Length: 149
Image 1 (cartoon, helix red, strand yellow):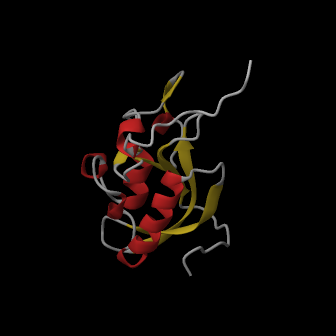
Image 2 (cartoon, rainbow, N blue to C red; image 1 turned 45 degrees about the vertical axis):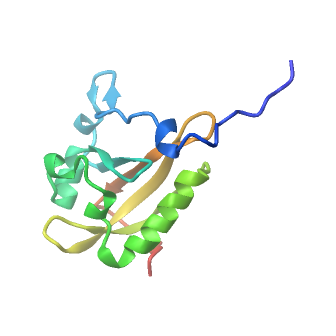
Image 3 (tube, rainbow, N blue to C red; image 1 turned 90 degrees about the vertical axis):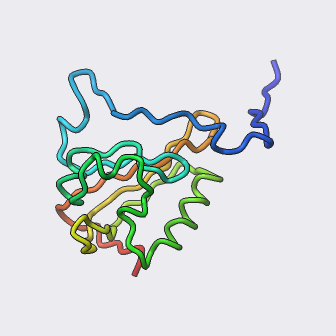
C-alpha cells in the first residue's frame, strides 16, 4: 500500500485545525500539580493560557483565575514581546521536535521581571500540526544559557 502525505487543507485556518487544550493534566493518581512544585504553563496555538499550575501561582505571583484565558503577554516582559511573538508564530507555523532550556525572564504579578530556569516545548499532533506550547519552570539552579541577552 503506498504511503500518502498527510493532507491538511490550506483553506482551513490554523484555529480550525486546533483541538481544545484540556483544562487540566491528569495522572493516574491525581493532577500533575499534586506531584510537582514546578510552574507549568500551557498555551494554545494563539498564545492563550489554557492551563496554569499551582507552582505557576507561587513562582510567578498570578492566580490561576487571573491567568487562564489571558495572553502569554501576562508573563512575557514588555521589552521581549516582539521577539517572543515572532518566535511563537514561527513555532506554531512549522513545529519541530526540539525544545529550549534556558534561564528565562518572566514578568511576575508584582511587576518585577525575574529569571527562572525554564524549558519550552511545542505541542504538536502526530501529523505535525501545532496545538500549542508548554513551559516548565523552576526557581532553583541555572542553565547558564541566557537567550535574551
